[in-house]
Length: 220
Image 1 (cartoon, helix red, strand yellow):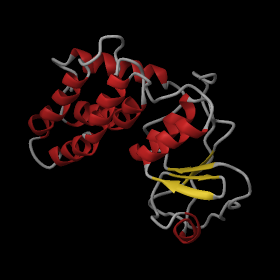
Image 2 (tube, rainbow, N blue to C red; image 1 turned 45 degrees about the vertical axis):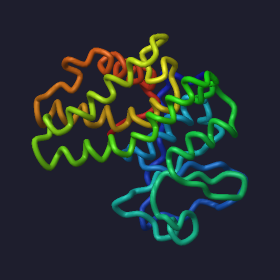
Image 3 (cartoon, helix red, strand yellow; image 1 turned 45 degrees about the horizontal axis):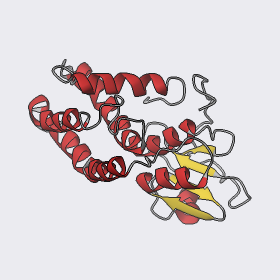
Image 4 (cartoon, rainbow, N blue to C red; image 1 turned 90 degrees about the vertical axis):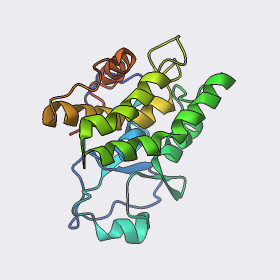
């Protein structure tokens, strides 16, 4: 990742009053929201692979999004989406794998069959994980979210060759980290609770990706 530590200057988010960028003019564009954890997955992937000069960011204001985005770019009207080679692609997990397969840069998909298989298992749980965290905010958040964070603590113990979910940094970490860091902040600020307490593997895992992406993406 050649640009690690370099703060990217972000273009302003486009609103209902903003003109549409040219479509299918040969430019590869990532339509994103700077504060959306789903979109951040693909942003992280782009930056990790060093594609800042190859994939242009187009910020979308989700509270005042342009009509042309749904009508002419992505009918699902959500982010992220990717404009590449005359087509528009969507869904954050699919886009991580698409960028990994179709662009240069370090791979996020492990070649070790055991890691690949386990990665698919952990990825299959990510929607349940995020749903449980959001649901926990409606009740006793600390207690209700505990099993979700325990799941990650246990998952992080599968491989011992690194602090990541598959030992090595991979797309599985990218899928989880925007949500974990966001909820870590919420639980600390709102509930005065440290989600890493009693979870040393989770604490180490959060610290390393946080440093890895310093200057490359923001939660807020």
